[in-house]
Image (cartoon, rainbow, N blue to C red; front, side):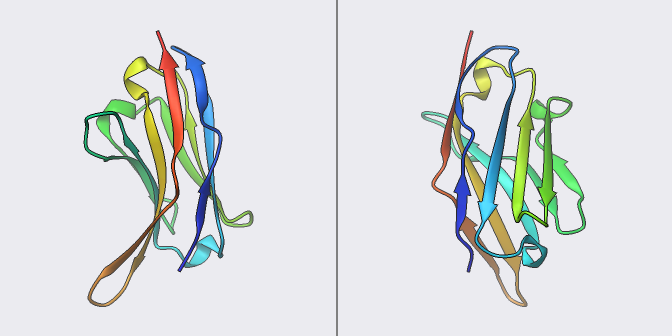
Amino acid sequence: QVRLVESGGGLVQAGGSLRLPCAASRSTFSIDVMGWYRQAPGKQRELVADITSGGNGNYVDSVKGRFTISRDNAENTVYLQMNSLKPEDTAIYYCNAKFFRATKINDYWGQGTQVTVSS
């Protein structure tokens, strides 16, 4: 099991930047994939970016070139650096951790942090 705590959300103008940290309660070396998802009002939760234990990042097309995901295993933290923010990036952002087991994937979620981008 792991507990995830997000922070760093807030209100920012379009074109601005935010960095979202997600602190894990255990060593991130042991977490197979860590990621950031978001959910806007009236929409389904979607993957924004994730990163494997080997450091390979994956991004949804709408954030490529603007967002960067990274993990600091020494600090047990994964970061989402968001640049050139747009109003459509407004959502609650959730941190996720996945543990791959022989027959299933165990998912854990943080409580979410609100990001609001004004035009």
